Amino acid sequence: MATQPVSEPAPAFADLHAAIARYYTETVQTHGATPHGVDWRCVPTQELRFVQLLKLCDFSAPFSLNDLGCGYGALLAYLARRHGATPVDYLGVDLSAAMISAARRHWGGKRNPGRHAEFAVGHASARSADYSVASGIFNIKLDPSAARWRRFVAATLEQLHASSRHGFAVNFMAPLPRGVTGSAGLYRTPAGVWRRWCEQHLGATVEVVKGYGMREYTLLVRRN
Ligand SMILES: C[S@@+](CC[C@H](N)C(=O)[O-])C[C@H]1O[C@@H](n2cnc3c(N)ncnc32)[C@H](O)[C@@H]1O
Image (cartoon, rainbow, N blue to C red; front, side, top):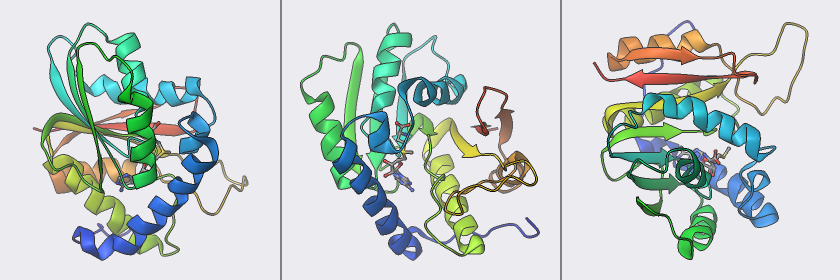
């Protein structure tokens, strides 16, 4: 990327938010509260992403967590199973109202020991939390302009940073090898682009997690 993206306030992206919400409303209406319902292949790879994102968090003490682009709240099941001893105050936020309805239905009747969980429709969390995570929110690029998509990503990262006391974690799809063509609708970008941006623009310390068996990487963005 030759120039640093400059973020725009959220209303500038209302059309993009609406397009993303429409896309995922259709997936959840077709496949329900399942990995396919959030456009993932299967539970193991969905959870492999959670493993990387949660490397940000200190599980030795209770904490609050915002999950931006929470889908149907699959992260809650993983937290209960793998980190059940640590109380987590969880807020899941998603652009798709249908997705949030599915999350509330999915979790409404379930016992979730040690956890307070809420869900909200939106493009940003209304509260600050110790940490934020966002899994898969930038994969489907619904704007044909690369420059505008970068401004959208920048604005979303700024929001994640502003609402996270200790830091946030987010994943991206990595570029395909030379000569391999993939779907034009997917956003793939080298790790250095947003690592540098977070360091320079947010003044954060960034760890890049890769090599976990997927053509993806995770940025752990810690506040200094
Ligand atoms: C690939 S799905 C992953 C869902 C969940 N994170 C998981 O791993 O099971 C991406 C979700 O993020 C939501 N989303 C995408 N961009 C968003 C944004 N800017 N703000 C809030 N939600 C967003 C979509 O509606 C969709 O439900």
